[in-house]
Length: 190
Image: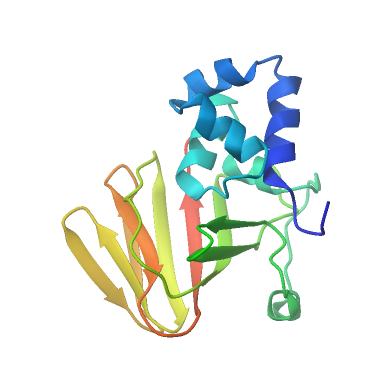
């Protein structure tokens, strides 16, 4: 396994720890069995929506799935850690043509209610809109981001932000020619 967390293996281990079959977790997650098994086998690199469905079905936060450290104190992340991360510490998601690379800013903090990430967003083509319970805050750091939210579209440049409810269908994608970077804070109720 590489330095990056292998999300599929972790989901399998968590599912087994909860004494659930793949069929049971797929049903609880409102996903097809094929979709879940593809994620567990790392054949499908999921976006946040399926991961949130899985963590909710397991009764845990998204951050629990993404984090390895069980520290009880505050989480300190130095800017140099983010800047030097050639491959994000948390996960790679999106699609092969349109990856979203996540770097968790609260990896060492347990029992949190928000998940802050620095996300590198490659320029890409549109995907299906996602929905899940919770809220998201997006702050554009570099480049240009297009956020489709319901029937509206927002173009964000450096310094722009958008806060929205995630029960409304939405997607975040790069709007420029190069990789854009955003700060994203995701709140998902358990």
